[in-house]
Image (cartoon, rainbow, N blue to C red; front, side, top):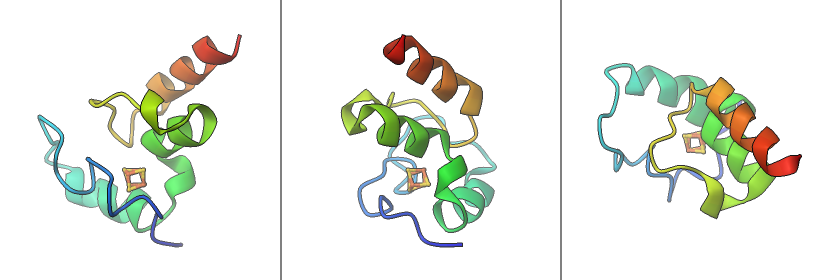
Length: 74
Ligand code: SF4
């Protein structure tokens, strides 16, 4: 359990994303303050770089993140 090193600038954590889900507080606890390794945004950031993280990608969208990473690495 650790605070994600991206919290300061992360658009999700700082509520800069459009259509923030009602579950945002729970996601912050689970991913940002819990296990960022399971966060979709963090996965893309670590695999492809920060510029490749879609603005509208939410932490729970693991499948979308995996698809993006796969598309870029094959
Ligand atoms: S866990 Fe994900 S959503 Fe939370 S601060 Fe880190 S990159 Fe952003």
